[in-house]
Length: 189
Image 1 (spheres, rainbow, N blue to C red):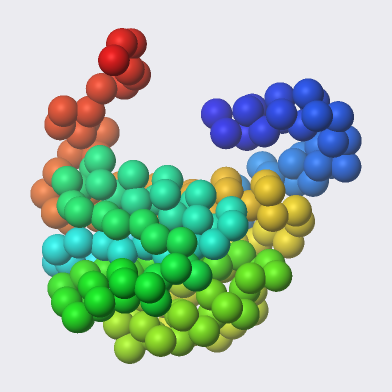
Image 2 (image 1 turned 60 degrees about the horizontal axis):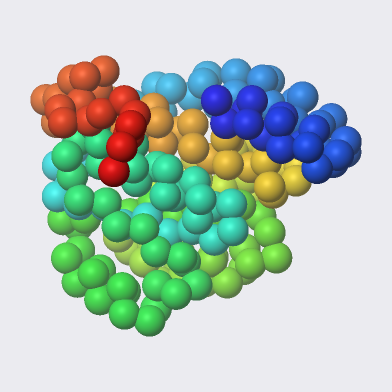
């Protein structure tokens, strides 16, 4: 659905250069799906966590919001999302919970990457999962094969979250295909 919405937005804004980039997305998605076993293993390691902290910047923040939503709605687990560059201003106190919480840092290679990486290094002892398109060497890294425009990087960053949320719910004993109390759409407020 996001792919279609991005196609419509590109047409409406006449950003033809992005249209060519978006056409690469199906192959990127196939590449990400090949790593399903890795995401399943990460989900199994995270199954005992009581809550999750998500950090992101730029399109990584948008992906972190969606990833937290998927994990929250399938596992009924608390998920907090913070802009990575604001994490030091209070929310970093949550790291006092140590290994009770799982941590995700979504960091696409952008002009803010070095700042996000510094924050990542501060919490590296908590073994966060790093979702990035950079070539860093780190044990819990999910590499997204997207080197194009950052405005289109949300799909490659969200897909691993969706797979992790699916398996995480199974490992926690829930049915990811029928989350409780979740409505398909909001028809009135």
